[in-house]
Length: 374
Image (tube, rainbow, N blue to C red; front, top):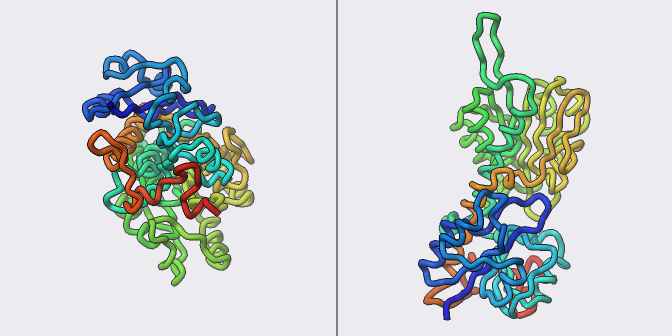
């Protein structure tokens, strides 16, 4: 009997994405799987029900009906109320395991094999499954467009008969996937761009995009990256020196994009209240880390805060604002992961595989991931 995939309709307030596009549904069906999609699941991402039906999916009226006899349940974010499902079903999505053991415990209590896409390791063979990269890439792009929308001047230098419009100065804090895309986007819009990051490898990447690199040079900086490619927490002495350099740099900027995140930890504070107040009226800060506590001391999730003429943009779930494209990329990430799991019309979880081992949270009613089982 063919394995059944259920595609849930997202229930989180700020979530417009969907876990499978009609294109992905066609590929699942071509592999011999059956697909049920909750009606309206793709509507907010511009994928109407009729496209899923045309791709070969069956529609269900709610998540419980989609998931009731599914072998694999796909979501973007885990619903607060888990759908009724059979014991041992796979739940795959961005499950936010760092939100707490209680959250992970719900998956175990429901007898789900929960696989969290945020935990995909940053290794070469897992790149096509890396949801953090696929979503952050578009978030970095959108952050610059949002900054441009709130900025009351132009980005590029313009020569007119009435005078010259100077280019905007954009400072990107954190040169990971989101930051590098923000740099590239700001450059395309004609801004003068600079960036900072604690990881030494970022310097060459930033400069290759035509931006200048702002960083305290030190021995500590050379060990500022984890084996997984993430930034490490730095010492207090380094933080003080870097904060002084950043404060000096921020005074000259028009736009600041902050992107710094540390997995499993609150977002590092990069922009203090004093720094905000030192900036020119009309400046804009877009805090991409606002949902993890924020890189800016004054940012508020879901709000646009104005302090001394400086706008601080705290948009929730930036990837969701490009839901059509972010859904398409996310759906491909899931499709690639399922290529590891579904073989010969059967689910095969090889717990020795480093990707599977890194991402499975719960199995057989227990929390098995070492980071969350304590």
